Image (cartoon, rainbow, N blue to C red; front, side, top):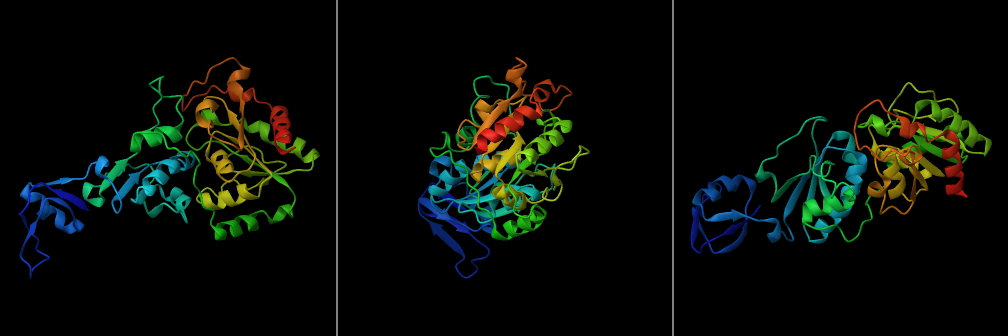
Length: 341
C-alpha cells in the first residue's frame, strides 16, 4: 500500500525489519506491506492516497453484488481505471466470478456469499470502493435516465467513460461446454429466449407466450433454446436449457455466442447478447430502454409500456404485468425476423 509521508526524517519502527531497527523516511510517497501499516500510522505523519493521487501500481478493490448486466456495464469504467496503470481486483458473488475470466483489466477476483454485504478493511488495497447500490436508486429524476455505464464512471472517476464499449472475454473451455449442450440442435440455426429476471419479476415476459413464439419461429426454420433460471412455464418447442448455465456466466455466453438472435427481458442474457455482438431483441416494461441500451449497437427494444400508454414504473417487484403482457408472441416473432433479415 502506498502512503504519503508528510515530513522529512519521519521515524518508523517495523518489527519485521529486525536488523535495520528504526527506519527514517523522507517526505513523499512510500510503499508498505499490509502487515506494516499498523506500525506506520502510529506516527501520525502519514496519509493514505486520495483518488486524485491514484496512479500506476496502486491496487483498487471494487465490491459489487449483482447482477450480470450491471457488472458488464461496469467494465467500461474499469477499463479507464486500468488505463491509469492501476491494478484492479473485484469482489462479487461466486456465480458472477467467471465474468472476469481472461479479463485484460481485472487481475484478481474475490467472492463472498450471495446476499451478504462484506466490509473489507481499508488495508485490503490502496482503494476499496463499495459499489453496492451505487447506481441502483431511481429517486432522483435528474439521474435515473442516465445510463448505468455513465453512472458507474461518474461514481468511480467523476466522469462518464469515454469508451462506452463493454468488455467480456469468452473462455474457450466454456464454449466447448455450451457446444455440447447445443448438440441436439444438430447445427441448425436457433434463437435464444431468456426466462425471468432473477432479481426483478416485473421485467419478466409472460410465461405462456414463450411456446407460441417458438412454434411460429419454427415455421420459419428456426430452432429455439430456452435459457435462464428454472421456471414452471412450458418449454414446448424449445431445447430447454434453463438451469443448465445459471451458475456459469461463461457457459451461458457460449450459448448466446452461437445463436442467430437473442430474445430477452431486461436481464443478463440481453447484455451478453450485446457484448458478444449478437442481434438482440430486448423486451421492456417497467424499465426504460432509453436508459438501459442507449449505447448498444446490436440491441433493439420492444417496449410494452408504450403499447399501454403507461410510463416505466421502475419498480422491482409487484403483480402488474400489463406492459409485458402487451408484447405478444406475434410482435416478438415479427421483430426477430426483422433483426435477422
